[in-house]
Amino acid sequence: MSTAPATLLEASDIGITFGGLKAVQGLSLRVPTGALHGLIGPNGAGKTTAFNLLTGVYQTQTGSVTLAGTTLSGKRPHEIALAGLSRTFQNIRLFGELSVLDNVMLGSHLRGTHRLIRTVFRTPAFVRQEEAMRERALELLGIFGLQGLAAEQAKSLPYGDQRRLEICRALATEPKVLLLDEPAAGMNPSEKKSLASTIRSIRERFGVAILLIEHDMGLVMDICEHITVLDHGQVISAGTPRFVQDDPKVIEAYLGVVEEEGTGNGERGTGKASLGKASAG
Image (cartoon, rainbow, N blue to C red; front, side, top):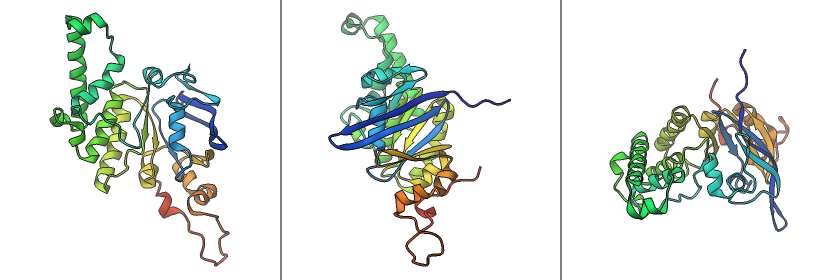
């Protein structure tokens, strides 16, 4: 008898208001262990704000967030990262002047046991820890095909490699759940295809759940098993890619008012092209 995976990340009725604008309201979602979950919606729907609430950049004004049963609400971003929730950003936030290797090692330092005396005097314990972090960082870079660029400045990398480096740095924090904010932004079709394969392999290799914001509906429909749709800060649909793709509320949010079939006014599209195509299975 099969059982459903346990919920790993759960947001319950979270929301935030900026002045009179309800940026996110009543958002609830569950990300099970090992899930690949999409969070989509039109521009301005509140997706990145939702990520900021989950990761402590903004504090929720309503509701709560838990990770593996631990309450995250009220914690600071670094505390949430230490609990096991890590993210990338819509606009790449690498340390451009630092090397590719150092960027990844900065992620590893989150879980380091640093002591002032050890650091100042570079004790054997400090050296061993730094070497272990270096080896781990190089291993991660190798997985992403970036090991040969370890000594390069991060800002010198092509855009697609910078995106992969940011994911690599996030994985160095050893997350339970990885939040990816528009990882395919600015990528060409070949890079997007490679990214889809990378995201799947990350889930399998590292055993992490993934919550993904992405505007490329073809990518979302192809790799995500469950999708939550936001519009004006509220959930308007949630379910499998096929369900979401055919939901009139989703089609309306992306394409405008949905007219009845057969009206002959030519104002309504099916939404299939814009919302991508769910793969079979």
